[in-house]
Amino acid sequence: MQDYLLFIDTETSGLPKKWDLPYCDNDNWPYALQVSWIVYNRDMQEIKREDHYIKDNDFTISPKAYAVHGLTQEYLVEHGEWRRDVMNMLANDLLEYQPLVVGHFIELDLNVAGVEFYRTGITNPLQNLKTFCTMLATTKWVQNPQTKYLRLNQLYEVLFNKTFDRQHNALEDAEATAECFFEMLKRGDISEESVEHQEVYLQKIRSEKKYLLPAAIVLILIIIIAFWLYGSTS
Image (cartoon, rainbow, N blue to C red):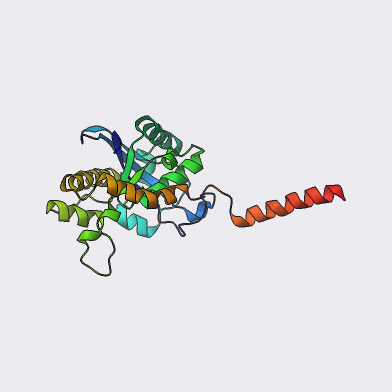
């Protein structure tokens, strides 16, 4: 396992309309409202924590998202920072620590961070780092046949026999994810092998070609280039 672990969580303006569209399809992808991460060393000692709200006023918060986290445009403007500054801080920590990046339902966090790196023109370090999802590691505790994985609060209650009432604040969720990860590691529910096993699936998510132009635009460009090449020789 890496020398450092970075636990990340985000609160967003909504959910993606489709998960397989490129990041240049701006209307498809939600915006990050809060981005939080905590860095630990492999001895489970906290190194640093970051908690940032984003004040760029270029998005609308969906009613469903507001019902989950309660964040408003007014709060973000008062307490937030510029998107580019926040994403620069995250990129710098990812590059400095080269951590194993851990989240609960990390597929969402990887995509939210990925699209925000794209919007700010910052190279995405997550594409070259190993990741682990605590949600994907919860199948052994699922008792409801209609549910595939446990939510973070459900996992927390299973592991610690107490409720987790601080959810849907990104920093609190990142901290709870770290507690769950280290507890599962102590119990043997997470191992080097399980991290590597997940990596096959999560690496596919990180490497999806979401930085490419939509197919329709690519097709138009091909037609224009072909017309220019063949038209100039006629």
